Image (cartoon, rainbow, N blue to C red; front, side):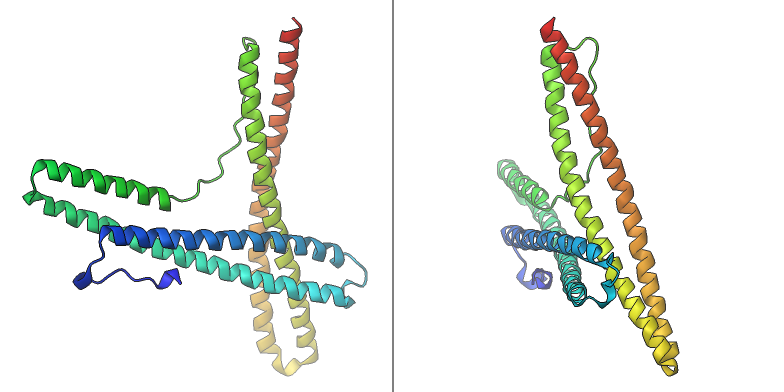
Length: 269
């Protein structure tokens, strides 16, 4: 596991190349874990949609197929949680290695005081290049920026409108990708909520059938209810972001129609 990698001790200090290689290896492992997490999200979202449909049936609770789907989803949710923990471990390891990398550059820079100017400049250039490579490797993924809405203007030429349409098309593609990802995340949260509500039903049934264990069961009920409230908060936040993306896509489509109409009018003369 990457999170078990250790920075070399002072007695056997890792070289700058060693540290860069270790960072690259952990980043590669994190990328593999991220791809696996994306696969799990898609699988869990698909199963969550099937569970949501099955749960609307009148005999949903008695359905053996639904119970099997709930177990499968719970297994996937556990795998997702494990993937999240693994990625946090990778992030912690990368941060630790990056600190060691920066400290090693600082140490090497201080040693340059006894080196001639030409050699010092060459080494500093090498270390700057290494620093840039590491920065590129560990740069965090860019947060989703609001969709860029460009609007036609009365002074636009056909060329101007073509450029604006290209921007609008690219933004529509980016917005659609974001919306699909949000829909998957919402579906997974809703699946978790359904599984948690079924667990709550089971606990309440247990409480009615075993009053001697009521205090223990009530504590479990309280924990599950807290989990449900947390899921609901996350779901509302995701839906808020989703609604903003949908509004942006609607505005993009409107501006694209206006640009195409203006362009057609200019060509027609």
